[in-house]
Image 1 (cartoon, rainbow, N blue to C red):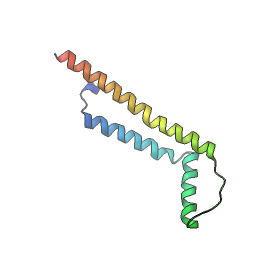
Image 2 (spheres, rainbow, N blue to C red):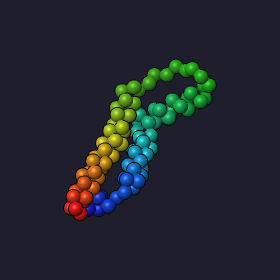
Image 3 (tube, rainbow, N blue to C red):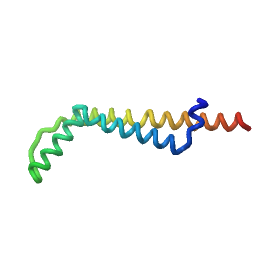
Image 4 (cartoon, helix red, strand yellow):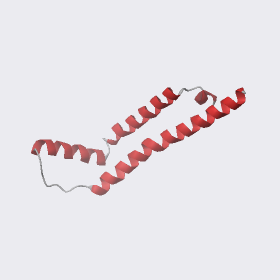
Length: 93
């Protein structure tokens, strides 16, 4: 906790932004992410409307899973950082 209390707010923001970016890039490897990439390629090739059957259940599952994996650890780290900073400031006083 002492090491976490020494982090500045900008270091914390950079760490959480890096984690969120990592998770969202990793999401592109999942079946839901690949479906989104396939849809974007098809939309570019067809120049407009097209008919396609979407794997909505897969896309929704992996999108929710990626969102949770991106946000929950980031929020937990922010909460731990705030508690560590408060504890360090009380110990210094």
